[in-house]
Length: 265
Ligand SMILES: [Zn+2]
Image (cartoon, rainbow, N blue to C red):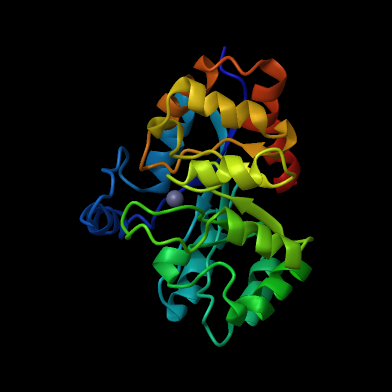
């Protein structure tokens, strides 16, 4: 039987924009092909098929002026099954007010992406933004590691994650892709075993079972979160692969369900 599951990292788009958004993203060099149509309806069908109760839908504001539309859409799609994380642009002159607006809307977190938004995770210009995020109590889902569509220049790697958390120890940071996509030697060296939240999306695909097990068994089980990066990978295939690794029922339950439920309370 498939245990209950939360997918902490998915993407979807408003119905009228989904087809165009996916084809634009698929055209980026190195990017994967979507396995869903990019709509909330398509995501819900995939969740039903995979036995996933709840998905975090992460947005990325590539320009400051996108924020009002993103927030409006996030408020509209929020439900017990869809937990939207809006995004503001970190160099938006109104970034601090945007954080307040997300909190006041009752949403649980935000997503930032250093490559798509053009910043380094520990950029000193972002100190006030992180300060406000930390005070807000919002979850901060950050892309970490390299990105499929960008040159392999580090912007949000394990060393920067540690630097950020050192400065903002109460920041509710959730790192992505097992601590840093395609930079897992750095994850093993700097992050593994520490109390740092790590969602595991779009990573097992690039690992042997032994490599995946090393990270998933080496990290405290309270700090692991299931994720898929749907529509860029299949939710059903990710659940099946995870369960094939034999992590043990207690670790599986925490990773797939318990930790996410606690954070999203
Ligand atoms: Zn993603």
